[in-house]
Image 1 (cartoon, rainbow, N blue to C red):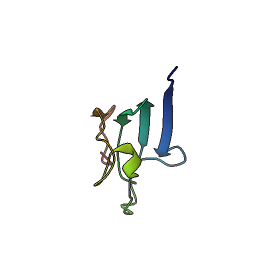
Image 2: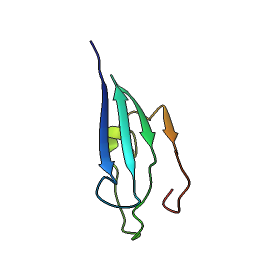
Image 3: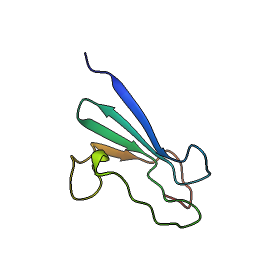
Length: 69
């Protein structure tokens, strides 16, 4: 039996830069893929479908408007 997994990649200990991955089997949805407000460069894991490898996410959902996304 598959279960829904949630991973917080960024943003749990800072304001801005949120990135949350929801995964069910091999399908992913990304929530609020933002960059840190201090403008530091960040890399996202190819495991969440960003970059040259890995499956593409089904959707990217922005839940609110801020300058970071």
